[in-house]
Length: 201
Ligand code: MN
Image 1 (cartoon, rainbow, N blue to C red):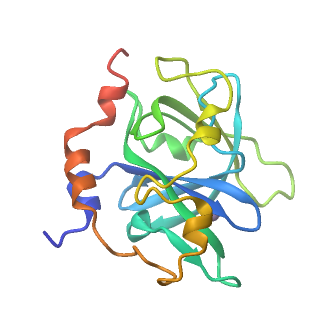
Image 2: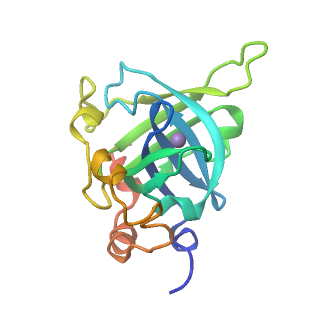
């Protein structure tokens, strides 16, 4: 007790739906005690034929993994944040998180919504381009499905069941859940492993 979740599992992943200047889904993977982060502009697609632009953003502290609420306008990332998915991740057997340095990661997710095998690939940087553009893509497995159903049907928080509008209009405070630990989720995570999601490999 009292220890951060990070040290208890070490392989969390989360997705925060973020209604900022532009709506996007922030995919964050725990690596070496921080959250490696990508902003997925149209959200993750479970369709292997649909590749999604994932712009690399700065590493976030582990404490941000439980955040849901409203970031005030004018602050970095100002807008409504929903905890849209959470669970554990693992590199595919024989792969490693250090592959990210080489610009690719083949990994497995055991989330409430995102499951199975996924791929992140860094695109070649064009001259003068400051952003690191990556592609996020689902690989074919039992969890793949045609079309864009995932972001279309999953419209509520995995943490509180709230819609974006309900989070946005919550006047309880700007950071209602920041810093609070979710014991039920922790127990669930200790049972589930992302390896299970890719057992067939
Ligand atoms: Mn964001």
